[in-house]
Every structure is written in structure tokens, then in C-alpha cells.
Image (cartoon, rainbow, N blue to C red):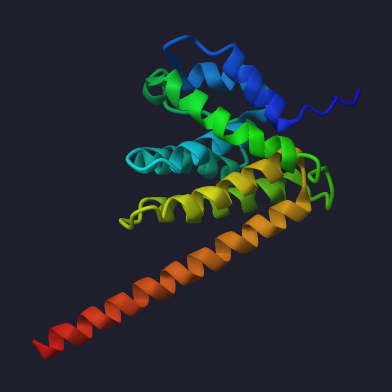
Length: 198
């Protein structure tokens, strides 16, 4: 039996409609999402990661599902202490309200294509998300918007089984990681040059 496709915007709105009034837990989130768990959790964490101040927490949390995707798990599992930790529903509401107007337009162009075996897709997504999560904690004002946007693109591609969008997202992740590495290398060389002068 083929499961009817449910747009990501609908899944997110359903989450928000049934969210606890004040606080929610990751365990509640995973139970609501079921088969969408990996993609939606990564998408939500990416959207939250765009907000200055909580991007470091988002980056740390992103490492968990990304690592589990690389390990070949079917659904994400968080340590009990983290799974039962309460977060303000306001974060969830803000993320959904920020994402859905964009998703409603984007979903018209996104559809399953360029099918890739799930075991390959999951590992590629996991590696790309880890690379971008590392950049999320870079101590540069507003820099988190760029890696978080790439993570959101990759998560959306994974949810919608869109291989073309996934390829675009992965290329973006590799390009951004290369630029970041080159910038760090230049700064390191510059610091070494200055130390020799002094």
C-alpha cells in the first residue's frame, strides 16, 4: 500500500496545532512525527539555529540525528535526559510560522525525483548536516543563517525525496565548508606571520 504524500508544511502545521500550550519535549516531537522524524527534526533545529543565542544548542542537538543517520538508524533516538527536557513551545511556533509561508511556495516545485537508495541518502545527509552544524557555532554575527539555510534545504529534500534539491544542498554544504576552511587557514597563516613580526 502506497502512503499518500503529505506536504512538509502540513506536517509542521499539524505539529503546531497539537503542541502543548507552554512546553514540549523531543520525545513528544518524535512520537508525533513517526516516519518523518529525521527530516522534520533536522529542519526544525535548522530553523531554530537561525536565531542568535540558541544556535549553539541547535548545533549540538543536530549532531545527534545526523550521526544516527550515518550509523543507519531508522528513526532518531535522543538520550533520555535530552528527550525529556522541556523546551518552550514558543520556539516551535516561531520556527513553523517562519517556515510555512516559504514552504507553501517552494512545495510547488519540490517533488520526488532522482531517486537515491535511502541508505546512501541518509549517510550523505548526515555528513552534510554535521559539516554545517560545526559552522553554526562560528563566532561571527549572523553567520549562522547561511549554514542553517543549507541544513534546512537538505532536510526538506530528504523529507520530500527530492534528489535534485538534495544535490543542490550538498553542493552548497561542500562549498561553504571549503570557504570556511580556507578562511580559517588564511587567519592561521596571518596569525603566524604577525607573531613572527612581533
